[in-house]
Length: 101
Image (cartoon, rainbow, N blue to C red; front, side, top):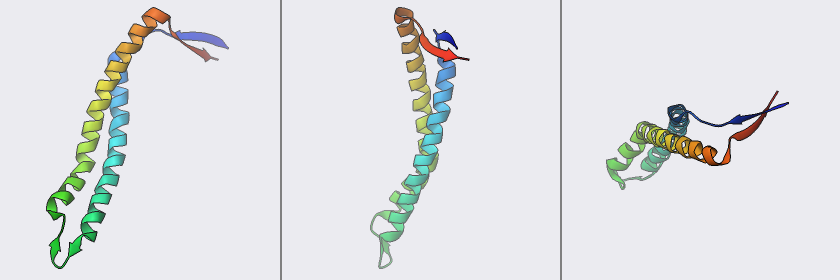
């Protein structure tokens, strides 16, 4: 086994990867939020009127679109920040040690 060191991470590369991963998580969370909102909206129907109003239903249905975009942007930004900090830290400490075969 050979020991290798990761000394630098591509800033935009890590930003793109984390952006996509966070967007996928946002899609999953958005789907759950949409289902919960629609379920709660359907259960709150009393005598021809909705107690929560239509705003809650529209917000929940919009979560499946808004959350992946929001999470994707945050993932991209956090990936860039993480890569920058990693590159500075490896300049002081050395690389990240990994073993490869």
